[in-house]
Image 1 (cartoon, one colour):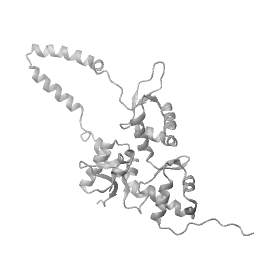
Image 2 (image 1 turned 120 degrees about the vertical axis):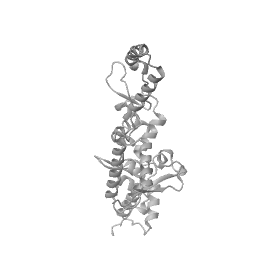
Image 3 (image 1 turned 90 degrees about the vertical axis):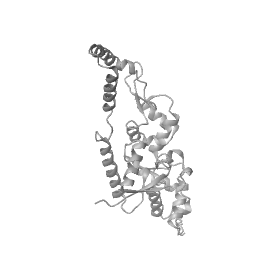
Image 4 (image 1 turned 60 degrees about the horizontal axis):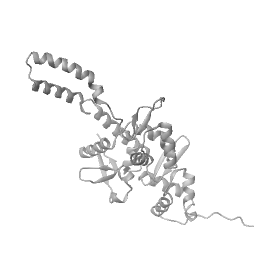
Amino acid sequence: MTPRSRAKTPDVAPEELERVVREAARGAAGLTKTALRKRVPVSYQRPAKHVDAAIDALVRTGAMFLLEESKGALYFEHDPLAHLDGLVRERLSTPRTQRALKAWVGEVAPGYDVAFDGWFKRATNGAVLYEQSPLPRSKAKRFGREPEPVDVAALLSPVIKSLRATLRKLDAKRVPRQRVRELLLAALESSGADRHANGEKDDDRSRFVAALDRLTADDPATALLSIRALRRRLSLDKKAFDDLALELAHEGVVELHFHDYPASLPDSERAELVVDAKGTHYVGITPRARP
């Protein structure tokens, strides 16, 4: 009896195979490449290397997302970090401990809990999660989507008390209150020194360019790099990232490529693109030669 041979994929254009794979990946959350390949219609599954090449191409262009974990590479239809950002902003009602928050993610977004640890570190350094005080009789920190209310009056009470004593001395010397106001306002404004003055903006710029260089080195054959893939490598908030990308584009360090129809994207994906003052959404970035 002649052994039955496995079906082989008929010759198809890479673009067609990418379309088939992307359709098969709808709803994918934390799938291995093997599991993702099995979703592809049987008539397109062979040879496997062609399917894998289509998966890799979709990841490079930001049409699918890859998460490198200790257990291996996992694939998602949506950017897992951006998805969790949106989930917290839209659905997290009460602050939770880190452990409770991870369990909550597993319940409301099955498959995305594998991305939790990396996302949590980024979220607590940006403007997604804010640390809250522990509950009574507990030492566990909690995290919520809004900053914890601060009793400003209580914190400033010692300062105000000292200021009143100083004002009495200034009044005795007939120093105009307007002069005092001007000096206090100047001191207040100087204490919030801008990011550029203290070097933070320069540091962010250096990290941005370094991350772009690493992304380029990871895939030197790809000229157009994914904005979303680059954003995942940095712990910058959206405004800081967008401002840097636009500033570098204006200086000619990079070239940005706009999305033809951003309204067709889910909100969580569209939020990951760079947006300029005119509302143009940029999906790709290309580094230019630097001297």
